[in-house]
Image 1: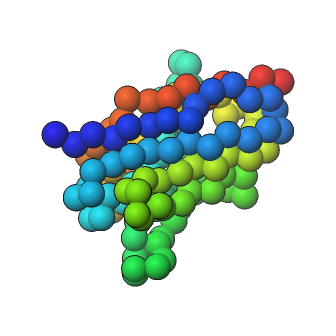
Image 2: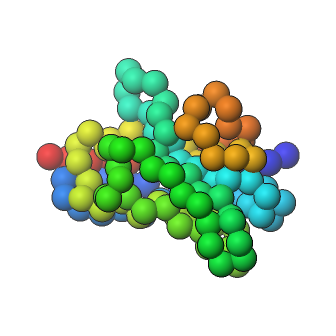
Length: 125
């Protein structure tokens, strides 16, 4: 059974920062793209960012336009973890954030194979 475990959500003020983390098993982490999605109340789940290992020391990344320049996804290979550093947070970033795994980076929610349980991020104005 594939397990993706998120951590690091919480409350931040507008303009502040939070860092999310997601731990995965070695088989999934090494062979799959890892991504972040979010779902705000009353809205559909949407793509945020994703990363897939390319060489031993580099990885491809993709970001939603709404977070580009503010959020950074990174891979921590020794720990089989990914992180999402979120800076310059806005109230519109308030959502449940989900970690996901898929063979390739795609933006379509429906195409991702595995999901974590989600972690709440709340940004106050």
